[in-house]
Length: 147
Image 1 (cartoon, rainbow, N blue to C red):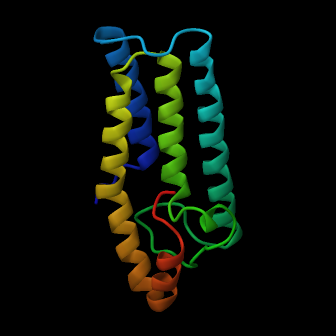
Image 2 (cartoon, one colour):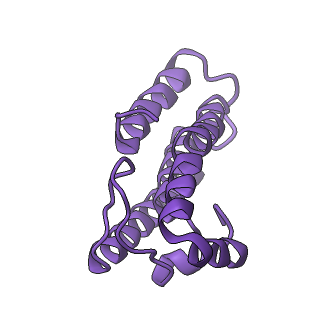
C-alpha cells in the first residue's frame, strides 16, 4: 500500500493525459463543442466525491485509505458503489479526456482505474472485511465494487 493519497495520483494522471494529448494525440475523436460534455463528467465526479466524503464524515469514519475505518457506511452514494470516491475520481479523469478530445488520454483513464483497484480498493476491502466481518460480507454481496 502506498502512502501517497489517491488524489495525488489523480492530479498526476490529469497531467499525463494533458501531456499525451499535446505530445501524441493519435486521433481527435471528440471535437468542439462536443468536448465540453466533459465538464458534465467532471462535475458529476466532483459531486460524487463530495457526497461520499460528506457521508463518511457524517458517520464519523475516516476518508484516508491508510487509517482504520470506524464505521461501515452503506447509505447515500454507498448504496450504489462500494467505492464512490474512486468512481468519482475516474469520472473526473474521463471528463478531462473528453475535454481534451484526442484518443490517447483514454489510456490514462483505463490505467488509473486499474491502478486504483489494485493498489487501493483491494487493500481497503481487506481492511473493511477485517473490521466489520459479516456486516461487510453482506454489504459486499448487495453493492457492486464500482458501479
